[in-house]
Image (cartoon, rainbow, N blue to C red):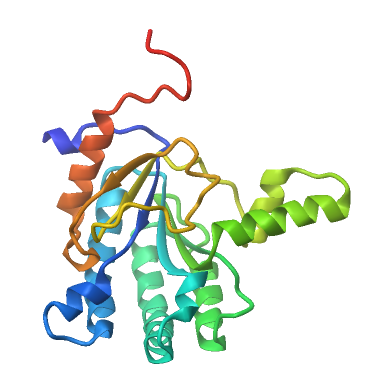
Length: 235
């Protein structure tokens, strides 16, 4: 067993901002959409390693609510990739005993994507090896605002339940333990702001298409070496 394969905190929630697809492609003289296609391999390898490391929950930032502002040609291409890839990814999840679910707004997703989402979730609902969550049309600020409005309008209620309802999560998950961002940027970009309250942050200059299972192991090893006090002091 290598240092990167030592036991990790369990149940553990890892979240990843998959950044740098467009820049990866541009630096190679390719259209930006080529980077999104290349990122699919990284997604598969990362998910496989997460299963091997017995990570409980893996949440991937696939498309933010702000991404609708990108050129329409790129947005349409992204939606086509999602609709085309979700069936094969769901089949892969079934083989690996992974549950796939989508968090974020659904009312703005194109019908082919929404239908693919619903089929993928239904097909993988019994997976227990890993809970893989893709954030689509997701905004933490929007979710927090709508959860607060729900509590206000109803006079009372559980805020966490309202927050889950706001971004269409159908079951609770642990708070994020480790947040990874690829692509060299060092910000949260409106991703899981509530759930990342005590997350350890790990930034890498590697673009998402260059990320793989070995680099996930490197991030996990860095996480293991950190001391988490949650506001207390070391004993």
